[in-house]
Image (cartoon, rainbow over all chains, first blue to last red; front, side, top):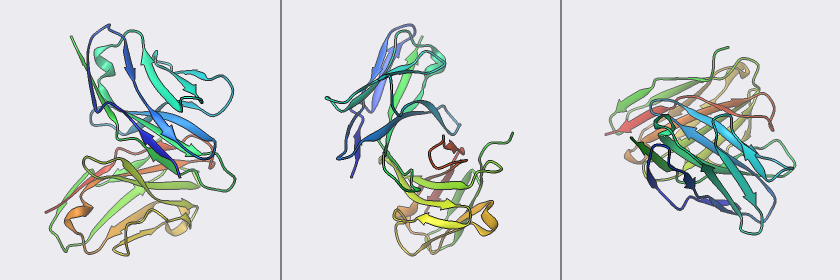
Length: 116
Length: 113
């Protein structure tokens, strides 16, 4: 079985400051890793994902996450945040296994509040 | 192209009543998923359809929940009778293939009073 821990439920930060949202997971099998974002009054959107290859993955809006297998982490970072980044961020994993199942296991979410 | 749409966006019902949530996936997406987020807890998987067949319903809480996907297009999730602990946000997602990106709807916020 897999589990996901997001260590911070709320992260307040000032505009243009750097931010790191932490995510750790546990799994007895290899996993795919995801970050989803939910902006106010919108649905969940995929922000970035790690399936294989380079352990550093980037999104189109400046976020990046690094898969660290030894520390079982997939922390999300951005060097300079904008007001528009205010949202709830979810880390999720999916077991890498055969068969037609892509069930996502989710963390509790981190609410990022960017203040002017 | 229309995204995943869910209806209604909000529903407030009394304990013991019945509620039906609807999800329209992206056209052509064979895979449809239901998830639920209860307040203060993580989002949890409910079930997965491939076309009209239930591929995995291991996350369905109990037999008060019934999901259908007749014809392999839209899906409904019926709760009958609703209990207070059923309150939460119900998300639907769809994907073209099982290992491609899943697109989520805005969710239905269900409140049972």
